[in-house]
Length: 232
Ligand SMILES: C[S@@+](CC[C@H](N)C(=O)[O-])C[C@H]1O[C@@H](n2cnc3c(N)ncnc32)[C@H](O)[C@@H]1O
Image (cartoon, rainbow, N blue to C red; front, side, top):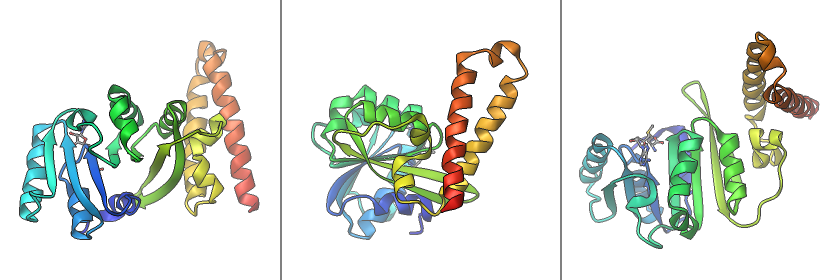
């Protein structure tokens, strides 16, 4: 099975021998691929919608893995019982949806040794949410696939450092390891915030707002980080 670079990178971060919960599994490609590679013990593949649950059941049956992958239809972590999953993956949803799923069943989320999250947007707020709720950012990755740059965040329970707004935006672990795709990521952020400021400048009210001041300061910090990378 070929699952693509993004899912393969998420899979590579799943600890060997664990029981995986893949929340929002869609076709259950990730758990089936990890089982094919004998990387995990078993998996719970959860999805809120009937279509994806059916697709997941089909994949699991096609690969003869019904005894290893339990497909459960339901919202977020509600499909999990206490201490069932060692590692929870939530990929391919917005950062705020991911934070909402974790908040809705915080005790279940806290029982997992590791969270592997791949937000489609809003990674900065998700990082902040994790740090404010007792997780530590343990690893981050960037993957380029099909013209998109995907952010992957691995979080474990523990005391987090304090990060600046710009560090939450860029990803502190990506900065620490000087990820090879960081210049692209910085460019993407700079373009998006410059565009936001230009739009705000069309209205006097927006230009005098606290939000405008905050975005201006964030952009200044991002430009500083970007200039440092150019010097490296
Ligand atoms: C874009 S797909 C991502 C599939 C796969 N995780 C991946 O990254 O390729 C998002 C999936 O999340 C499911 N989903 C959205 N909100 C959910 C929730 N609250 N609980 C469980 N699944 C959810 C959708 O039904 C959909 O199948």
